[in-house]
Length: 588
Ligand SMILES: Nc1ncnc2c1ncn2[C@@H]1O[C@H](COP(=O)(O)OP(=O)(O)OP(=O)(O)O)[C@@H](O)[C@H]1O
Ligand SMILES: [Mg+2]
Image (cartoon, rainbow, N blue to C red):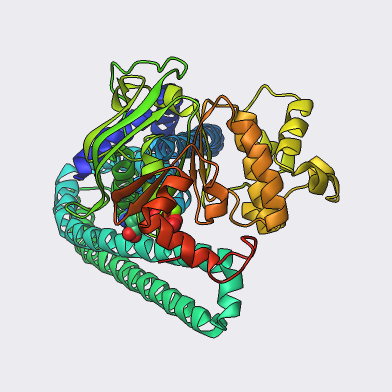
């Protein structure tokens, strides 16, 4: 993204604050003007008071100084406060926009992008950008105003000398541009480093149990230490450049100053100028140094900010893969059937995970999907709520192509229990009632009872108010599953997708939950994915997936009679034990 484009978009971000910015700008012009006035006042001080011994001015001038400082102070407060307020507002707005945008992105984005990287965009990049914006607004504008005022003074005092001084400016701009480019490059590397480190932390802290179980603490610490070193090296490079850019600009300024003292001093000595004029000129020139330095520092901060802004706007520009059409229609309550016709699906181009699938699922039917691990069961289930779009073929619900529907109307008719239970660090109640704003305590209890979760929830230290830890880590695997089943039950949607929903339950609880699910499945259309064949035995229809192909279809009995894949899976599971309770998971 070009700097120009970035500035244009920043202008959009700043638009709501235009009033504060204008007031602040006026305040800054006043402050800049008063800075110039300070320099100007040196002339009467020297020429009138010291050389012409003007006594009445001596009583006026100190008063003037007091007024100058007081007025400057008031306006300084005004613009500092206003601009800081704008900066904070911008941070809030951008974080809001980025988070809102991320929420519109498709699942594929989250599968491809490390969490740490996304978090780094919202936290670090926005911070960096805000710093640049605040600095740019506060320093740049103030400094520019001061520069303008002080330039006015030097031109007023001695325009020839002023022109000579200006000749040095292009000389000092050279290094500013040069270092600016470097700062920007370094900033990109730095933010990448930070993003990686954040990802790293996120994974290893979240996965502390595995790290410990595999005794990888030392390696992980080393890996992180490596990242820290990279961060430090990058920062050091940044510091080196900064430390270099400062004296370089200063030296160039020094050369200029030396020449001006020599030239201007000569003018005073041969009577072309007064000491007051020259001193006032010199004061203005010295006062110019700070704001000019400020302007040069602004550049590096701007470069950093531009890099951060580039990343933020880049993220904001990512289009969700799954998009609602502009003329999307609302799916009426599900009535008849879900139809998959010649569905092929690829995550990566030309590597189909599902191939030419044909399937018809009538309302009220219970369809079970079985098949070896990696055969595409979860993938198939993900197509129905349109987490992914089919690559080829069509997927219709009641004759509506699901691409033509609003996502909300589609997804609100589907309740889903995922293979990896997903719970939030919140109370049990809020986890069950997630997405259901208007449900009563009684509804939550009913759902918990139906999922056979009520008893254990009651026994938790704070019952339904117990906070269950990150990803529900304070519950057992089976308890987590029952909470997510309760959540699906409470959603009360006509289409139910259960992806290994009962896999972490012992046989006893599974039977109970199974019974609950059977109640739940009545009058609902259910897709149930399971490795344990005992779970799917009672389904109306079972399909067997293998390498993305639908290879068999029928009822439990008919499939057994077929003596094919299903039969083989079945034999594998039941050959190790007499009773079906001690089943071995059939992973191919
Ligand atoms: N987000 C993804 N990106 C790329 N490939 C993926 C993605 N998710 C799954 N796959 C691949 O798609 C194939 C099917 O995966 P899927 O999760 O549908 O299998 P499954 O039948 O549900 O297996 P399991 O029984 O182990 O849950 C696998 O080969 C897997 O590697
Ligand atoms: Mg799966």
